[in-house]
Image 1 (cartoon, helix red, strand yellow):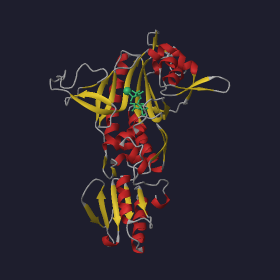
Image 2 (spheres, protein in one colour):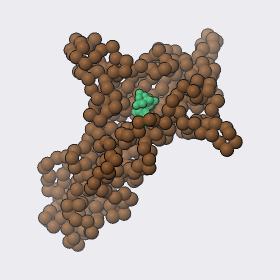
Image 3 (tube, rainbow, N blue to C red):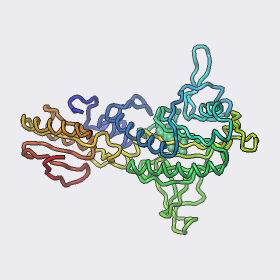
Image 4 (cartoon, protein in one colour):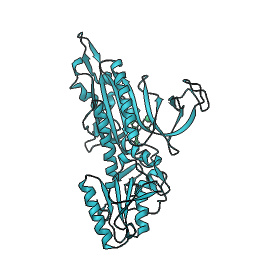
Length: 403
Ligand code: ATP
Ligand code: MG
């Protein structure tokens, strides 16, 4: 893509209202625009990143047997009354129609997928199943100040798994943990798996995937041996001996990028989701649910991967692999650049070409650092027919003949 045609302008100065690095950098670099607190528009650069994350999540969900679906965001009130969450869920957005009917804007989708599953699961032969979607969720969050980390409208991947027994759920749950760890690694993040309470409706188990960073809203107690608990439920305090290995546990500020739950039979009971087992006995289906905040993940990546000049995208989620920057105003530079741009594009390599003749060299280099594409390729009168390649965040560059 040619930068001269790109929808999205960079800005040197932070807005006075910016309260987090991810908001500040993503808005200044032209990835996102804030419509109101907790609600963002995504411009081409930002939408490319979200799609790269989503596609990676699709790969990993597919690898554990997940099938992708797409559910409605507008839900009937009755389904939410059936689970008790119409009254108990404080973040639920409620909408009234002109005929006084009431609806919920989906903050999560058990109330839709469980009744749907009921139409398709009736026998042990129909189990196990795993279905997921990537969709916009709505939550009436009180504190929506941390950029993409806490949205009122945000993108989530939610997978639901259906099982004949608690043991079968447990083995799938462990697979999902593995898939989640892969997703976060590919995003350039080390996620700590922390024990969490299962929420209000389950005495079963739940785990959070937590990324350590100063801007995190969560607090966990963690130990290098792998033990970690969310502070909200923790039986330990900072400095206490780790229950697994005895080393003092550390207190860390974190961002929760994913959360997985054993829901047991709670929602199956609410909607009468049963199956007939091999001996002809009717039993409730056991359900697991698994969320990843796709847009929060994008914010978390920026919180972890940036410096004073801008974003440093990990390779797999970068909007483009290469940022080709033409400096100066010589026709030869632009002719050589066009050839390189066309060759890279022909080779299937994604490249943003800064072909703006009116922008100054300093502006172009500052923009490249702000946008944070992993490899910068500079062509200027000084490179004399060659290309100066530099990794974002690295000090050294090298002169190469081709890419
Ligand atoms: P939190 O504890 O941060 O409020 P949650 O535990 O309520 O989140 P889940 O219902 O488990 O979140 O949702 C699954 C995932 O969706 C979370 O792990 C998080 O990554 C993401 N998520 C939840 N709420 C938001 C939000 N308001 N904005 C952006 N992402 C969110
Ligand atoms: Mg949580």
